[in-house]
Length: 330
Ligand code: SF4
Ligand code: SF4
Image (cartoon, rainbow, N blue to C red; front, side, top):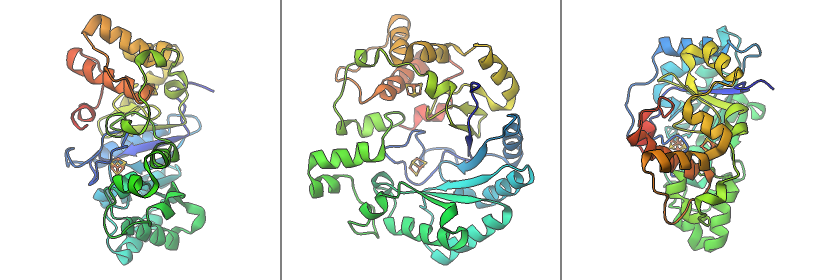
């Protein structure tokens, strides 16, 4: 498989959303700038996707893409015009009225959108009343049918209805109901939490901490070079895999980025991560930039990586540590 050849590209229309969930890998939330991707940039992003010989499907995402419905409609229309299958990923935070949700989904389907993905987890339910998630699922099923609606993760549909669906459910309620160990398993393993973004800091208490050396053998070849799922954001960042805050290059210059990566030429920090993983990044940061490892250890290798990057973004000048907002919104 060629390097940097994803099957699914998320177009991040905005990093802004109402929620600021604790597990978010991209540190999205209400603190980001209000201005979304421009229509011109959206067209450029979709055209860039066609650079790949077998163009990936795209999903419009954020942040919350329904904050900018006209832009989302334009994206669906353009993707359709370019022959790219597209779907939208939403947290359903906006879904307070089912008839209005049906209207939005009908408009999107008519614009050429193929499918809908609705996020569903205790982390979302801690910020968004579950009634909104359930409403969005019903409305999407009405309009797109079961083959074209994905709930991520469906097992949590039942779980989020265990408490009052009209208000957010604090994560502590799961500990009260199931006991600490079962709640930890349900939340961390049940969702398959990746420790990047905020989650290592805000959810790291759910798993045992390990010292940095525990991750010395982990490299990031598969996660960066061979990721199936990647993102183009509104600032031009091409973010491979689920590595929020780390860009492999500018998607507006995609042919050059792909040529460089095919020839094994990577930005400096990416080179370290591909070759030696986050422990290699720690060694570089400790030896050259004065990084002190966290005394209590890390919730996972991505937590280690993110913590080192938070230090490097302040002490060095690395074009690959973008967008800056990622580092300002923990
Ligand atoms: S997971 Fe989704 S809803 Fe939650 S903060 Fe991230 S973008 Fe917002
Ligand atoms: S350790 Fe860093 S580079 Fe590797 S997968 Fe995690 S976030 Fe990505």
